[in-house]
Length: 173
Image 1 (cartoon, helix red, strand yellow):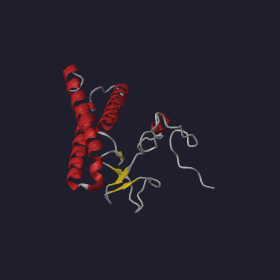
Image 2 (cartoon, rainbow, N blue to C red):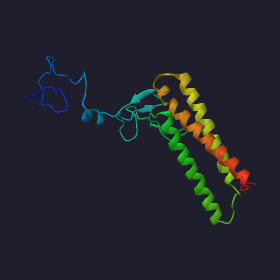
Image 3 (cartoon, one colour):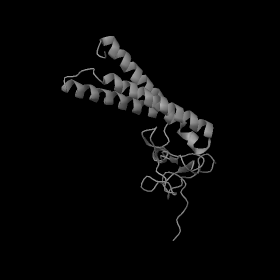
Image 4 (tube, rainbow, N blue to C red):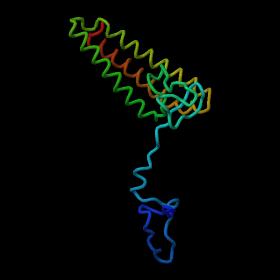
């Protein structure tokens, strides 16, 4: 049983041509319902093989390498700069607030909050260097550069900004 090729939003409906023009095919124009479900699938990249992995199995590439990088603090999934920046900035602020809350409960405010911020800045610098390495390396890992750069800028900005705020308010000694 063969099915007819899909020509529009509704596979069995091909409207008649208006004003002598032939009906638009799927390649010429798509309806809003089809565009809504045509989202880019997340592509993982194996940093050891330097190959994209569209369908990872249990977080591994076909050769068995893990699809994670410790400098990116997670999976090596392709992300735009803005998305990586906002997610990392939120994570850094939440992590700092959680650390400050625990220190306040232990009656030691500001005793080691500065170290957490310095660690954030160091993580940002390491992510920036990893992104520069991938940019020079080229290939599929070059698609991870916006994510690494977004994470680096967010970590450095969050760490430096919160450190300056802590010093200005006298919370970090």
